[in-house]
Image (cartoon, rainbow, N blue to C red):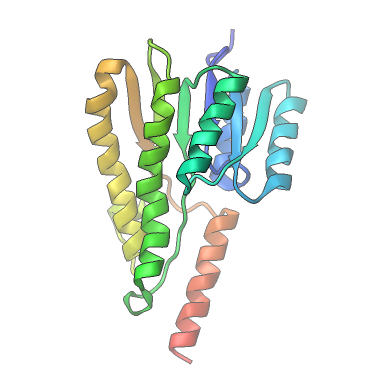
Length: 209
């Protein structure tokens, strides 16, 4: 019997990068996986197809997890398909490296809100789908919150908040048998990180022609 057999897992932002790899690993361990995506439908379908070809179970569900109505619709669809969630992986996030001089209120909210606020609201909305015997919530953080590299002030702050959220919710949800953890990977050259690095160089070139 596989370790996660009969478990239902939701991975947000799972069409590419760390999210896609996580979805595949959960499926390989026996879980039925909801591959959430926002705009990359083709990539999400590829992830689902790879899981199915490997003998797993998965479905792609489109939802913008920075929109409350979409989050609610996502949870409704999961309830209709599977009836519950046992594992929630909050992977959706954004990286926007750049110097202090480039920060605006809009750029701050774009990154911080998705990495922190919408992670919280996704978790809150998913809670009613966890069974009485609990489950697991895994938030994808980053080592930037501990090494604090230059040009990463918003990323570092938002990922530090993700770590704090883990500690608070572990205490708050522990009595409900829901475990809360975070993973803080180092540099992994995913599509998203490649784009963030490229945008950083473009920004610095514009500011220092």
